[in-house]
Image 1 (cartoon, rainbow, N blue to C red):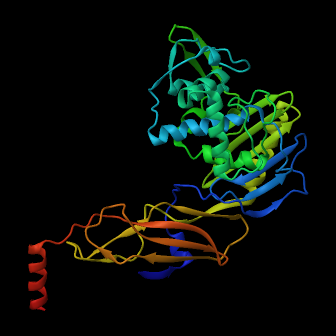
Image 2 (cartoon, one colour):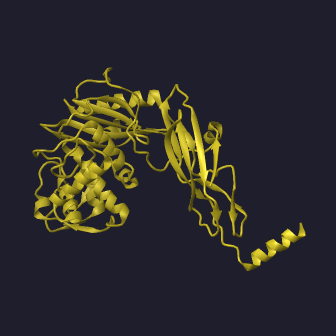
Image 3 (spheres, one colour):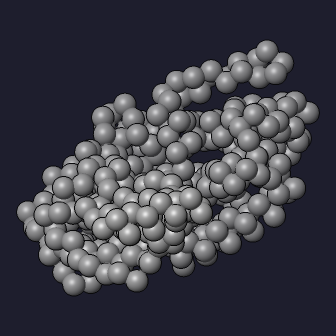
Length: 389
């Protein structure tokens, strides 16, 4: 085992791509006393990558969230997609129960089959209740079983003030969440790359197997009003008011905002814009490690055709901070003793990143190249070279 420390200057020399999410709930100068905006019951703003809170207002108050609950419906579907349980081209036959859902819908026809791609897109773009129930029944056999999975996932993510009673958000007793939990769930959802293939669509036709067409318009008006916004989930019922979970990105900084119980539709969008503007004006994500740049030292490999290999971080890492602050950053690199054979991408150690002396992130170190095990001829040549010295 080998351990050494990289300086901040060395770390900052790495490039600029980020993969993965650090799921934590710490706060950086979060404030609740100074109102950024009025006209809602609860609000929350945080950094996507670290989860650090920037702004909060009644963030733990349990409230109905209407169709924002589809954040979790989509999460279970995209989890199933990523795990290979389903594919986008798989067909779902719509039940009479799913086709009969009220509220926002794409008017699915009972007995007809649609692809997961169509159904998921309609949920993201136009909040289709019928599509929600169709995918829930397809994945779990019934909406009730699917809702149990929604609650299990919420608990797994650490959402202590969330309870789902259906997969659509239509009014039903004993279901609620809070702004902080919604932010956590939405951060998890947007970690799925497929989500953004749907979330930026503004207007698109939904084509039915019986040659009907339903026009879909994105319920998230921020993708037209706010250039940095590339995703969001709206919700409205008379009980819940106007709700919105949304995300926006500038340079390396991606923010997540939540507005619950807004008085008007404009209030929820205006509130999100004010929070985003504040976050982008006052905070930044500074690069610490780049997954595409090798560490400066090559590692010695025993019993290999090569005497050493280059290594790199498995993913990039950024440090969230106020724009006018310079945190004290150190990195401890812990590397294993290596023996061939080794494959490119194989974990060979880790990098611990510290912010002001406190652990902030841990990133695996992986081999940047393959190393085959030395054979008899390699060992014979090596012996001959050593005799010649």
